Image (tube, helix red, strand yellow):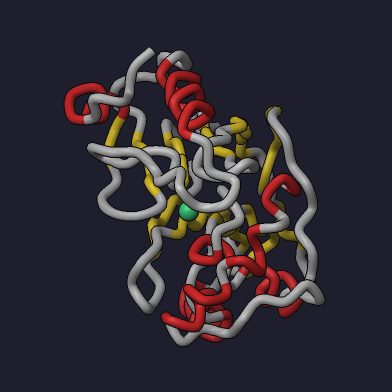
Length: 214
Ligand SMILES: [Zn+2]
C-alpha cells in the first residue's frame, strides 16, 4: 500500500517576521521555529485539529523560539535546540519587547540538546540534523529526504546569508556551513525554507545566491 505523505505547512504567525514550519501526520504535528505568541499557536492547532508532539529550533535567537518553551510547557512535550545556543535565549529579550511578546526567562522549560545525525519524527518521517554554526554557535538545519525539504534557519537566504555580527556569530564558520549544504548535492528541486522571507529551492539558490558554493 502506498504510504500517505505527511503535510508540510509554512506558518507566518503574527506579528509577521519569522517563517515557522509545521509537519502534520494525522492528528499529530511537529513544529519548527515557533515564533509568535503561545495563545495564537494554541488556536492554530485547534483549527488544524492537530496536537504538537515536539518542537525543534534552528537556533536560539528569540525570533525562532519565542513560543517554544511556553508551548512545550502547555502541551507537556519536549523542545530541542543545540545547547551551544543556550546563552542566546535571554540575550534577545529586547527584540521580544519590541514585538510586544512575553519575555523569555532562565526558569522556562529548557530545550533538550541536539547534534548532527538522523532521527525519526512523528511515525516514520526521516529527519537529518545538519550542524550549521556561523549565524549562531548552535545553528542547525533540518533535511527531510523523503519529502525534498530543507529547513535552514538564518544560515542563508535567497540572495544573502545570515548576519554574523551578533553574539556567537562567526563569518568563517558560516561560509563553511553554507559550503557544507552545497556539498550535500541535494536535488535542484529540493524546497529550501529560510528563517525569513520567501522559500526557495536548491536550484534557485545556485542561480541567485553567489555565496551558495563550494
Ligand atoms: Zn537568527
